[in-house]
Image (cartoon, rainbow, N blue to C red):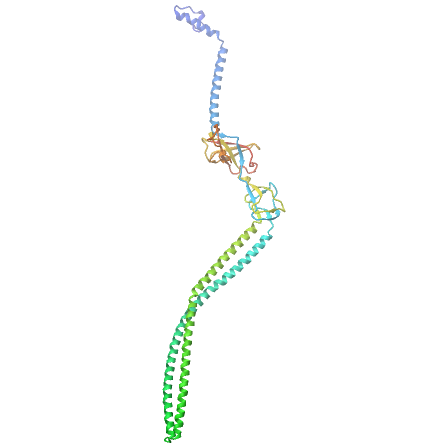
Length: 421
């Protein structure tokens, strides 16, 4: 009771009793309502500070969890469609900004000239194949004929040699007959002369003389016949030697048969090569005929510069196909933003035109900064140098089905956020 009402207590002696009444008097001066208000204000300030600190921490964590840039555009590979053969355009099957599937016939060139070229190439191929087939048949025939001729020529030489030997023997026999006939003729002439003398002296009968005269004439004729046989035998010898010379010539000619076979085989190989050449020309003609129909290389929207009636040349660009299903984002991040960026990290792409947010991931990071790929790259080794933060292109690929409606078009501005964690 004394602590609750100090004014009615008796004063104590000393300092302690003197100071206590003054402290209690100051507390009594502060209203209880104000003390409660100050306490609540301090609690609110403390709460606000704590919330601000926690919010700052969460905000810092959130802002450091991703990197963002507004220097980004949708990108895609444009597919130029060119004519592969020259000719007159007879049909254009698409309009501007029309969606086409891969393999769709876009433009048709007049195929008549190329159909004629295919027919001519087919005829040339058939002719070359027939020539090669005929030459291929002659190779075994020539080989057999050459072998037969060589054997026949060798046997002809043997026959000619045998004929020469036989003719020479006949010549020797005829010469012996000549010598025998001449000896008989000498004897018959001597006998005739003796009988002539005896007949004149009438020492022998005339009949004996007549027999001697007949024998002499017969021996003379036998000598002439023997000479004729000898001459004939000599002619046979000459003929046999001539046949030997002919057989040797035939043998020499037959020995060139292998060269003739090789020559024929070479002609066959040349004919086969000609067939392959004609077949290649036919394939080229067929390809040129196929090229008269120009098809879409990929699925996408078409921008065309060709109309019916144009005379196009080989290599002339006629259309451009934009494959909207293959659109990606090229984001040019500052080099300081790539510290923790890696391939495969999740990304969100905010499209300026539609306000949509698409999902994707980092596909790759360029190997150099953008200016290095320009026509005139910067050269920092000369002149005054000012350090500039460089930007490096980062390719962000959309997840499957994100651009199903194909509203994201190449060249559109986007804002990608790449989450680093």
